[in-house]
Length: 424
Image 1 (cartoon, one colour):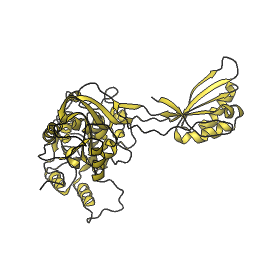
Image 2: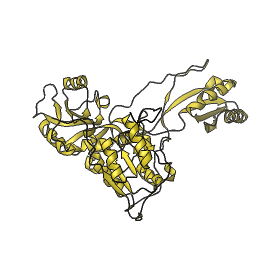
Image 3: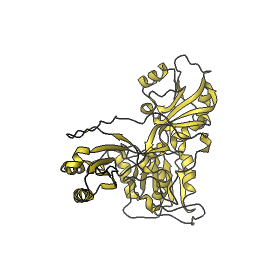
Image 4: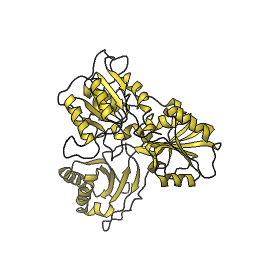
């Protein structure tokens, strides 16, 4: 459902049309007054097995998703398309960032039942050898091994070599990446939960999809003129929908309102300008996409029980399974300084965390100058290295996926996947 309108600024003489303010949803949006321990284990759906989000990048249509509960499971295997449906239920691909390359990246030419699924943060040579040894049918690689467009598949490039090996072995490759970051209960909720329960807010709010993006309002003299205009629009573009046509109580004409897609806006306006009455009363509104509470990039937690910086370090070491972390103390802060607010973003989080007011930032990596900027604001920074801030979520996801698949399907977390950097 489309919500909230704001006026655009395009000028058609004598039409007066207002320019919209360009806004970016980066302020924290409160989505839960409960602790992080109450995060649901999967993405909510609108009805039995129907995802409330859709996206053209998804390899499955949400309307075809079936309920796959533990009670309904049959001992056996699943087709790849059925596993993809479950993955879409857990984290719709529409939640991924527009620049990302998510979904099914490699699809075998000969379909075969999925018996073994391997979860990894990165698909490396070592992980591919592990997958081949396990006779794996599907690799779920958090980071997409195919990201930039390629013009050839040759052996000199290591990512292309892995793609060739997957194709030759009949192994499918799927990447969720930023859809896992954004989804409620996903990577960022898991990461912020390392410091305990709290009031959790989304830093960069995810927005729903909308087929119609503009609302056009105008006046006409009579019903016949309404019908003529709508017939012209239907013949020109199918992306326009009549919402209502209401007679004005003073008898001055009929108020008409319609919605249209981006592609249909210009031809629709051109049609209206050919008619005298609509051209004199034309108003165009930009329809904002509805927010999706709880979904989006980054998290800010107001901790139920504040901790010291030193305690935060120990908690995150335990949560991430690491013996070492990197710390930059904020200006005027010590290891005994209190931390009551923490902002996190898995991976490389500087662009999401920048400017956020918090006692502590937790992310995988930030540049030298980004750390200096945060410290100057009095914010301490904990860095774990990129993939170390993400990898621990694989075990959580394994449990969520396994209970939705038949007993004959084995879900395994890679034993050789690791961050390329280590402390020596």
